[in-house]
Image (cartoon, rainbow, N blue to C red; front, side, top):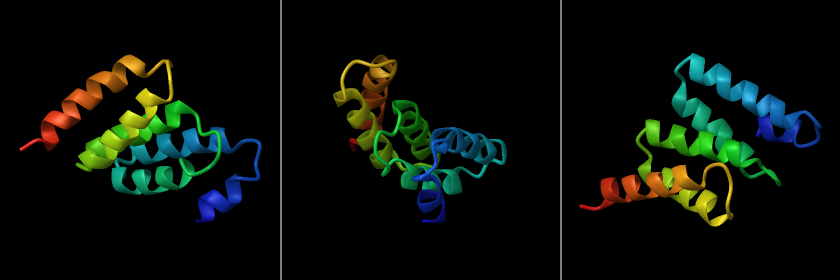
Length: 99
């Protein structure tokens, strides 16, 4: 909650979110990164890039269901730079989740 409460009032919260993602990724702390990014995606007007980073992180830690939810959300949000990636990830994750 510290992260969200501190940054939701900052004009620089998006830069802080990217910085945080880079730090966790370089430290290979993917679970912690996913937890913090889950806080961030609750904020209004979160960029699609942050959602895509979270979707990839959730996939990396094996949370395929959450990754699928995020990719569907990205895909359904309308045409954007991640539409093709989202479509491919949705197919891939559905295949992983189907017995």
